[in-house]
Image 1 (cartoon, rainbow over the protein chains, first blue to last red):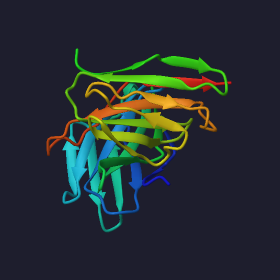
Image 2: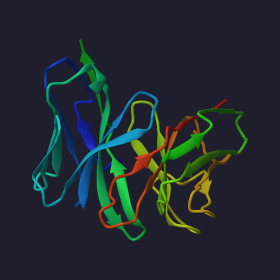
Image 3: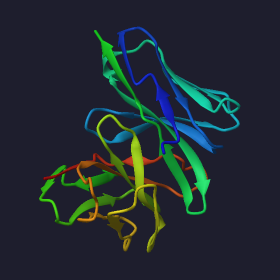
Length: 113
Length: 114
């Protein structure tokens, strides 16, 4: 089953507004990562937050992590039409076979002009 | 250019045929991964390999096979035993240094089986 569940499934906003996406997961993690996918393309890594961190910033991105609630959020500020894409959280878990990423179901973001 | 290439971009096959998807990387990464993505869904791990000549089953390995004879290459064979092979297949790689957490993805292969 999917480790991460994301909310909302889809989000439509106007350019300049902020977009917030949430991710919940089930087991202990080493870190949590957010990826972006443009339609029909591969994924691109956006930001990583370690299990001992609570908040991290990168440009217009802000990620929070609450390990007690097993949840994370991604905030994109001052959104642009070019931010239109699907966004996935992925939890990094160490297994006997090495590190594995387990992806959430994704949030489809549409930023309208 | 450094990166991951997958070929072909689109692949069509008849039911009952095996098909092999190519994944090549020149990032000198030890670890490579294969994922499957269905419409509106997240990625599910099929197989992964941490080092040459070794690989592990992921969450949905049934009906798939892989090989890792070279560091640069990790081909995926979709066999006739895979009940629903039509999907978008993504390959990824990752370095093995302690600070290497990010996975780098190829552009994907969209497989349609009729």
